[in-house]
Amino acid sequence: MIKIGNIELPDFPLLLAPMEDVSDPPFRRLCKMHGADMMYSEFISSEGLIRDAMKSKKKLDIFDYERPVGIQIFGGDEEAMALSAKIVEAVQPDVVDINFGCPVKKVVCKGAGAGVLKDIDLMIRLTKAVVNSTHLPVTVKTRLGWDNDSINIMEVAERLQETGIKALTIHARTRAQMYKGEADWNYISKVKNNPNIEIPIFGNGDVNTPEKALEYKQKYDCDGIMIGRGAIGYPWIFNEVKHFFETGENLPKPTISQRLEAVRQHAEWSTEWKGEKLGLIEMRQHYGNYFRGIPHFKDFRVKFLEVFTMEEMVEVIAETEEFYAEFSF
Ligand SMILES: Cc1cc2nc3c(=O)[nH]c(=O)nc-3n(C[C@H](O)[C@H](O)[C@H](O)COP(=O)(O)O)c2cc1C
Image 1 (cartoon, rainbow, N blue to C red):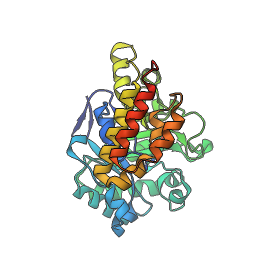
Image 2: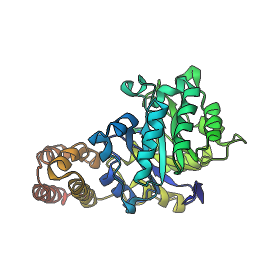
Image 3: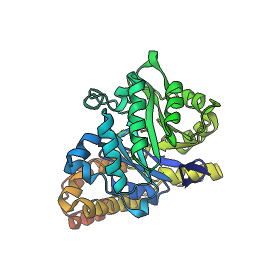
Image 4: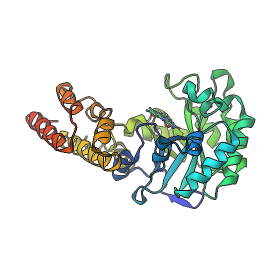
């Protein structure tokens, strides 16, 4: 069993990564259904929360069935981070997570996200500000360092632990790598094998198959794995990995009908959460992902993109199912 504060997770938990515009309640619900052990919200701007910005507030929505769930915040100002942690606490997630990994310029420029990888003292002050302002367990997600010449995750992990955080997720890339190149998980085992480190260390970066998950589990010694892109359009990944761990065998891939049912379910929850119009507009980014690698989907994707009501959705799903009925995948 792995513990984050008082939260008990199964041995070697699989976590859904925080992903902007992806890890919202409807998507999280699907991932939960398919075996995610813990999940994180999209990142939320601390400044936005304080300004009471609608977009930021909406991201605070969490539901009991998805627990344990963490809400992730980012920002470069101690006071704003402390205040926003209080706002987050009011909606009672299981965990507050701090993002020190976002490589995007508009975030980094404000000294937030991966920006603090160049200023570890600031990173520690920001973390302390959050830890001291909430009763909730605080976790952190970060990268290896700013660039290849300044990898500082060993020092960062020790100093973060001293602030009182309860777990650390390491995306095994530098900021300079953005999302390119391979994640270097060797650093994750180095941190994990540091005798001073007691908090759980979760590994993140590039895990998108059961085989890779098992290889990394065996090779790099971490306490669990966080999966991001591998779950987009493919929430089945969590149960697939678990099954592979247990049996060494692959579950059958989801059929076309199962993929379509996931699309329908995702769309239904999305419309429940955001309203039919916006819910279905936001679904547009997902259709292609649910059919990654499936031939002939292009024509149907166009049809899905023109869906404006759940009624139309049901029709397009039926049409797609009929077309694929003669194929054996
Ligand atoms: C579309 C997208 C949005 C993301 N948004 C966030 C975010 O809000 N907070 C965060 O900490 N990381 C974010 N990330 C990074 C992921 O959490 C994860 O660290 C990264 O994708 C590497 O893991 P993966 O190879 O399993 O995808 C995002 C990644 C993607 C692809």
